[in-house]
Amino acid sequence: MPEPDRTILSKQFEIMERRLWNVITVPSMVLTVLAGATMLYLVPGWLQQPWMHIKLTFVALLLVYHFMCQAKIKQMRLGLFIWSSTRLRIWNEVATILLFAIVFLAVLKNSVSWIYGSVGIVIFSMIIMSGVKIYKYYRSKK
Image (tube, rainbow, N blue to C red; front, top):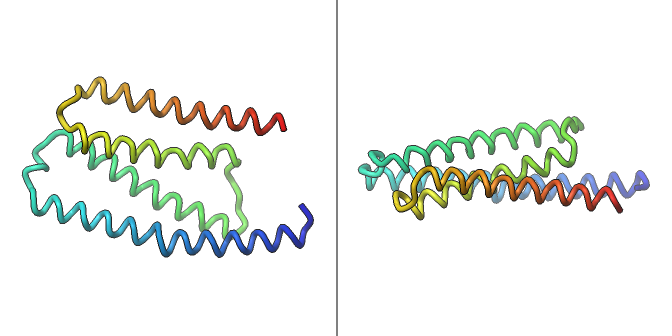
């Protein structure tokens, strides 16, 4: 790509990324954490349920993911592109897997064995990661 086009697109991408992060992602995280804390305050009995402990673990992992993404954004703003595009695609799918696990636990609670649930999450993760690898394969052929 010619340099003037690259610079223009990079600047536009940075504007879009900043808006997405500051207007949608961070406020959504704050509202979600506040809503979850309020729910647990109103129904403290849920903290006695094993599924809630696992769900909160996945929520904590999602918060760690959020702050790792913020660190990655700061690196990119400084011009440090450490991860490959494939690694970034795989990293992007981590949030999908965590969100799937969180919703899965909230909806099914105790109705499905933890063994089946764990196997389901692993299979779902393998499907997602396979999709990334297939995409990389077809993209490299072009």
